[in-house]
Length: 399
Picture 1 (cartoon, rainbow, N blue to C red):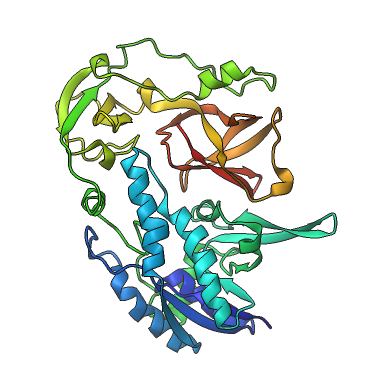
Picture 2: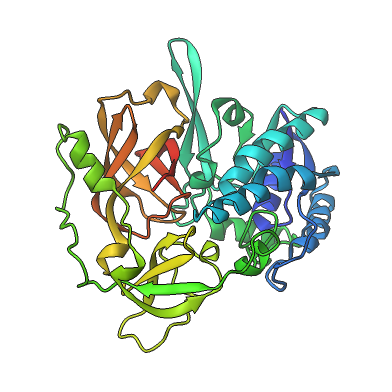
């Protein structure tokens, strides 16, 4: 029997995870994190975050486990929300949920759990943990969950071996419908509650309104780049040879850039910092044969570049590059050295089907070239690579 502190969030997943742990005979305590109090930009109606503590306490009482709370709102603002503001200000698209797991759930939360005597901490993530021995040392593995439609290993891509050592994932071998069924049979208060959406611990937000806490509105031009306005690189299908030169790698992974005179001004916006590559909503430009998508940003000049249709060449890229200081290997024993290449499955956003790619390690960074063109590659997002079902590493997309 282990002493396990579970992060009880007020949702159905952590509720069932707590029940499973207690049913297995563990000494379970619930710890609810208060991480956000400000309602600026937060939309009500879809599982409002301020109701979570009420549901969490009801579940703990129903299951019969001690219930504790801790206020980490100041640390959450410093480590996650300030990062969010900073990245958008640079014209990048951050993933706060990834940072929340690394900085809050598997760092500060663990420290609080240890005060309660925890041997392990548990969460309601849909993923699995494994371990192997290498040269007599235990190496922990992060694996995709059974429910491929709900697999949340992507959000844990930045955790360390020490953090994974402390973690337990009771739902790894379950599907969402199975979890809902257990909650219903137990008559848990969270059984029919909607899944949380939006920013981790904040909730579903009106992003521009939320960001305007720190970032100012600044009117600028939307410039449409026609698919026929310039000569586009004709990327070949398939993966490049392992012996590809650094020069060709640069060409295959380079982000597209534009000037205001490359296209036609078709509309206005309230600030380039409030948009992201691949975005359609919010451009408010009508009269086009195909929908407009953001294909590039220039926050210094406050310009948004847009193109028509999913198939616009400026929206689809062959590869991307990661800077060395933004690369994280969960499996350090599988780290690539300069000059090596390796085939992996990669995703650049949550729930994206895994994409075949070839990775090239160079002194200047890590290049990822995909088998097929990828739509909406956005700086600031995380590229995550897998060997089979195992998450090996991740990195912040530079360009």
